[in-house]
Every structure is written in structure tokens, then in C-alpha cells.
Amino acid sequence: MAATGAPTRAGAPAPLRWDGERLHALDQTALPWEERVIELADGAAVAGALRRLAVRGAPLIGVAAGYGLAMDAAREPTLAALDRAAAVLRSARPTAANLGWAVDRVVGAARGAGAGPRLAAAARAEAEAIDAENAAAGAAQARLGADLLAELGVRRILTHCNTGALACGEPGSALGAIAALAQREAAVHVLVCETRPLLQGARLTTWELRRLGIAHDLVVDAAAAGLVRAGAVDAVVVGFDRMAANGDTANKVGTYGHALAAQAAGVPFVFVGPTSSIDPAIATGDDVEIEERDAEEVRRAGGELVAPADTPVRNPAFDVTPAALVTAVVTERGVARPVDAGTLAALLR
Ligand code: MRU
Image 1 (cartoon, rainbow, N blue to C red):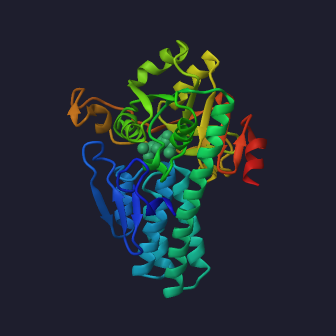
Image 2 (cartoon, rainbow, N blue to C red; image 1 turned 120 degrees about the vertical axis):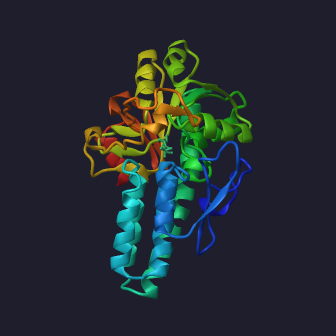
Image 3 (tube, rainbow, N blue to C red; image 1 turned 90 degrees about the horizontal axis):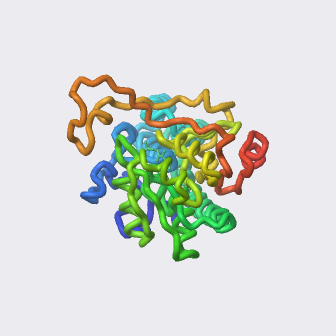
């Protein structure tokens, strides 16, 4: 069953549910305090939910965008309308590769189907195919990721941001692999970086780990490097949003620092994610567009001002980790190890 069709293994409403006409999303901005489901009726509503991070995480962003286009195609089944809807969705968040990838797939399928009901049916079928493929990819990443972590003898893991069912659909990317490892090894423990400014680690990853029954401690982001150096973890395991052809990879801001700390300490650093997050059209990480978000996200924590109200701010939402710092990349098609243009191209063939 596709990611959007089932409640999460953690026992909460599904992060996305497609009822055949509308998309129902667990509003991630309300977590962990409230499990609020919102209804998204068209592409513009999906784009709005992506922008405010009610729906977030690279793989889930792709699935939601596909359904956004399918809903617009049902309402106005012309290529001109679909192109307009695609432009709105595409601009919602620039860094996650899955957004443009899913939009291209749905628009391409619709373009091949002419106009009218056939266009609408093609758009919907493609969105549902993306959803189903994403679910299958998540299961494979979890299995292959757990295999790799077991092989490396990993029990104690540091992770960043949120890469569970909330970000990807069940079972998640990096968190899916960690959960699969925990099913084999009782001693798995996760250090969760809080992930300022929007606290996806503190709010979402701890919420998921608690429901999964996996031991964890929350740490402030600034504690991570010292803990890695002190030998508190066996590996750093994270997801990713856009990987360039050479393996340079954009992920939630703070990831690069964790990779530097891991390399300095001789600890493996592993990315887990679907091949739909790999962008072979981008040669290196220098070409990745990094989303800059609202200054208020930094000036405030939990809604409260933590700096003078007019403090100038920089708020890049992602950073780029060079391939040279990465031990392995786990995808649904296999593991790239070492990580370079050749091993990644072999995975994508
Ligand atoms: O800004 P977000 O919350 O959409 O962040 C994207 C992510 O979820 C992360 O960067 C994650 O580590 C990789 S995508 C599962």
C-alpha cells in the first residue's frame, strides 16, 4: 500500500492520505502538540502547505506535488492550466530535488495524453504511481540501510532533522533504516539534533522515535560535534534533499558540520534517501539552489522572540556536504560506497 494510504507505524494519522479526490495532510507545524489533519483541495493549497512546512521532507514533498497537479488537472484538464499549476508548485521550495522531479513526471504524463478526461486520468495515474514507487523505495532503503549499519557494527547513531514517515511516508529514509536496525538490534540508541530554526528534530523525530519505542536523547545542535568527538556515536546517519552527480549533497542546515565532526573523529557518515533525490543534471554541490527562509524563523524560537525584533538575519535552510566526507549513500537501488560520480551513475543506470 502506498505511503499515503496507511496510518504511520508510529500510530498517528498518515502524513498524507489521498482519497481519490482530495489530499489529507497531517499538519506538521502543529506537532508534537496536536495531531491536526488539513484538507488540501488543489495545487495552490498544496504549494501553500509546502511553503509553511505543514507538509515537508523531500520525498513527501514530491508525492504531495504530484497529487496537487492531479487535483488541478481534474478541475481544468488543459495543458495550459497544468503548466500554470506546475509553475506555482515548482516555486514552493527550491532545494528538494523531488519537487521538480515529481512535477516533471506528472506534466510529462499529462502532455502525452492530449486534453480533457484523458489528461486528467493520466495526471492522476502518474501521481498515484509516484506515491506507490515512493512507498516501495522507502521499504528498500530501510532494509539496505539496516544491512549497512549492521555490517558497520553501528548501534549508537546521531541524526539531524526529520527523516521518518513524516518526511517520506512509511517507513522513512534515514529513520526508516534506523528503525529497521532497531528491530534487529535491541541496543540501538539515537542522538537527535534539535535542528534549529524550526526544530524538526526536537518536534518530529523525537515524536516518531517515542512511538516506535527506540531509545533516544535530544541534544542541541551545538552539542553534536563534541559528542561525536567524545565517542558517543558509532555513525552519523541522515537523509538528503538534493545530491549532485558527484555526490556533493544538500541537506538540512547543520548537516555539513556533523559530517566534518564525523570525519575528524573517524566515524562513518551515511546518507539514506531515494534516487528521486539525486539530481544528475547538477554536476557539483555548488550548483544547488539553497532555500533562504524568513528571518522570523531565526529571531524566534517556539514563537517567542529570542533576539531584538529588528536583528538582521541569515537563514539558509540547507547546506552542502562535499562527497569526500560521505562514507556511503543508501538508496532503494543499492548502496554507493565510496561516493563519487561513478558509483552514483552506476546506481542510476
Ligand atoms: O525543510 P524540511 O523540513 O523540508 O527539510 C527537509 C528534510 O526533511 C531534511 O533535510 C531531511 O534531512 C532530508 S529529506 C527526508
